[in-house]
Image 1 (cartoon, rainbow, N blue to C red):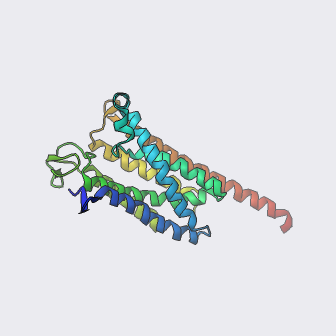
Image 2 (cartoon, helix red, strand yellow):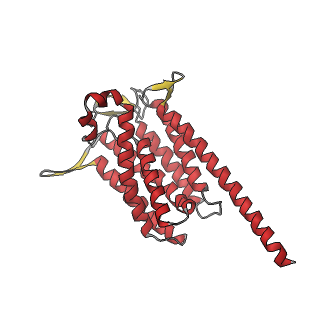
Image 3 (tube, rainbow, N blue to C red):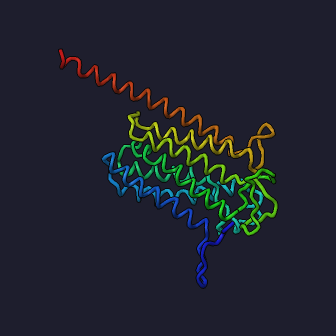
Length: 264
């Protein structure tokens, strides 16, 4: 594919770097508008993006080191200094922790902010996967003779043999889920619903695409670590939606009880 987009002297614009930049810039611009629509400070979107970048980088690197612990012990500098080895799930958890801290620090409604951030995470991940596809960084599946199979002879991790373009599969899932959430974003739901739906959507997309990835299978002979985490994300999303719905109904009932004496 195209690991390098542009070269001017010593400067090289890498496709993954460009997509990563767009994956933060475009969702941040959308978040600014959505925060404003919900009566929150638009600048919070910029701060969330910065916190997510820093926390996400640290989390992604730690996840990668844990996955390759034995190799890390042999050559730690290759894993600490190198720009390679950024695993999405680690980046998500690191970015999420940094974002939670930031929202708490600004003392705004966590669930309202999370509902704005959730759908944009899907969009940001889609750009990230496009970067993986363009760079052909080895994040693809096994050989395939399907019509849409791709070879990556000039990739960061080249292959002359057509393989499953798993980043493309995940892009399709992510954009489809983002489109659905975007279309229903102005409907009334309990705060936290869209954040829960994000967990479900991201978990489903990754769980399915993992069947065509070459990651090690750790459970039952077919399930990877990412799939186990995906199941956890789906359960977490369902739990968030259920809990927030119950909480919303309890608050509505308490509000009705409070108003009854005044009505009498």
